[in-house]
Amino acid sequence: MKLEVACFNLESVAVVAQSKADRVEFCDNFEVGGITPTFKDTQKARYLFSKELLVMIRPRGGDFNYSKDEFNQMKQSILELKNTDINGFVFGILDQNNQIDFERNSELIKLAEPFPCSFHRAIDYTNDYFEAINTCIKIGFKTILTSGHESKIDLGLQTVKEAIIQYGNQIEIMPGGSLRAANATLIKSITKANYYHTSAITDASQIANLNEINALKDCLTNE
Image 1 (tube, one colour):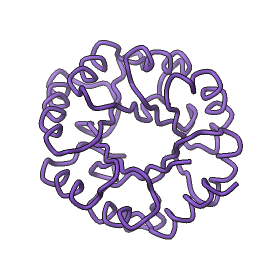
Image 2 (tube, rainbow, N blue to C red):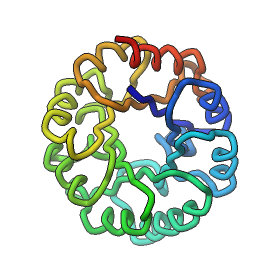
Image 3 (cartoon, rainbow, N blue to C red):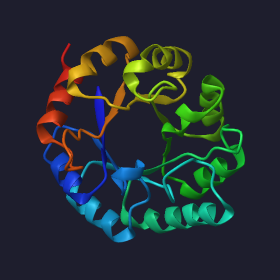
């Protein structure tokens, strides 16, 4: 089982580089749940972390319905960050009815080629969760990060399990949202996912905790 760690700063990337984790989702601004990092910081993150590195494309915190200017900003960020030797992008756009915005997400997927793209936890704010997953597959996303239409993965375990049963052979469904070593074994046993997501932040520092990452990874890999 593989582990992705959300890093909101370069200090966290440096920690994850020492850990057993398999992938970094790099972003900025922990307080709003992650936004697009700068070009310079992404270059530094790439230097620090030699494994798979994904970058968040999100112009601001708050909802996931973006203005024309914000959408243009997302497109520009993808074009710029493609030149930093990263491995993929993470984003998600909803329309005013909290449905997947098919047209705009498709445009970003096309712009990001040949890099794979993940749809982030905006999926958990959609009105029809399973239809949203189906739409992500049609658009061409490779991974969905989700807590099962709930605020944290502990509450959405059965929903994620059902999503993996229905769609797991078409898209990577990655549980996340308050995933820790303390609950990882239970989450693995129920969802049977292949990839898991955590921030591994255990205090007010906003920096990933090395011991937490390794303990979590051990939980995922132990039979």
